[in-house]
Image (tube, rainbow, N blue to C red; front, side):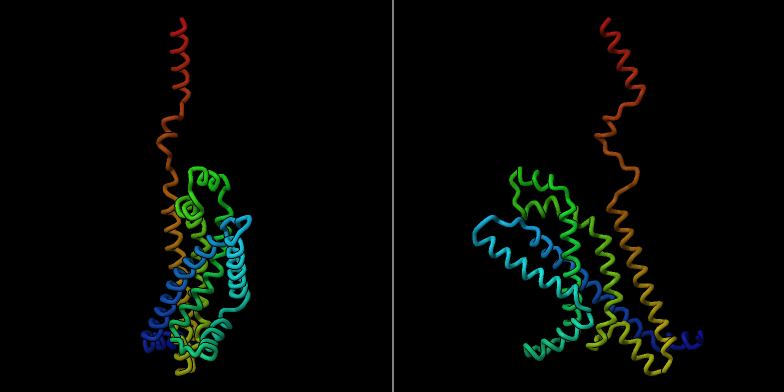
Length: 260
């Protein structure tokens, strides 16, 4: 490996590397946000209690079947295959000439949504049932219970998994080069094709991918620590209720004097 070649490649092609990294981050951020919203909606719907009888039961059962099929398909097939089927299939089957960037955002979003829906469902199931019962006891319906009681806890609990999905999306956008999306891998392939220095070109891309994933991981861990609050936090009410040995001795002496 020649470091002179690496420096030369960076100096001559840094705008293409930056554009590729920017496109990778853009697709990853939008895809993760939209996918998380999809996952929250699907996770909430799949945890709605099934009515005993009636039309609502039939409708909810059909919706659950459709959502299960969606989850199994997108979790059970590679994103690179999904990209080919959705981008080229939409043109053949529907006659829709989809923009490459729009297709990329759609593919990453629905793929992330399939994974996030199971993460959200697991987070909801992990919440103590007593909280659901208490919310229903004060008159909340399922949507109000989710909005005010369950989801705030679930979002905090699934934050590490959401961050992990974000990091995965940064790396998995590389498969979108099959539909000619100009993300980092596509740009690097173009650069290496011009200078025939494949190792050095992709070494630079490797460093850029690492910088992006490392930075995102550190930012998310910082957010997690902020949400956790200070380690030495003590509730004021609990602090007032804690009795020291001196307090107990004073109370005992006071009661003895009062009795005499």
